[in-house]
Image (cartoon, rainbow, N blue to C red; front, side, top):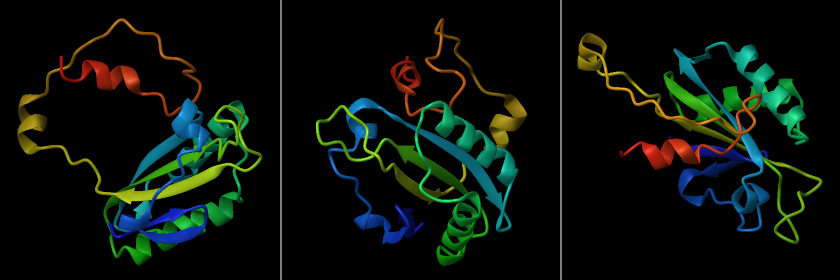
Length: 156
């Protein structure tokens, strides 16, 4: 993918950065959602946006645009990237923080198209290995940015 949408601005992938003061980076204060796009159509679009809005409300993160405007940005991003099949990740953070702790009054919203994860035929035919971990997820009601436990255990 060549373009992302950062706070309403179409940005070339290589120019897409967030400032170090973002409280999502400094404190992990943020949410995300992820969904697949097939033949240019986001699958279960409204269901994922419902979950995203629920997570934002639970975390007291204001979404800086309406649902209709977000849908338009996502569809425009799919079109400008000239892709029919991809995935979309939407990230909402607590914004830029003056003190590295207190969330800003304005959230940061990032919309990132990416290649969809494709399951290999051999994995479908033969199955895959799974690992279980005794872990209780923080805030299971939301899709928070905190997935550190999966990173810790994935190479064990």
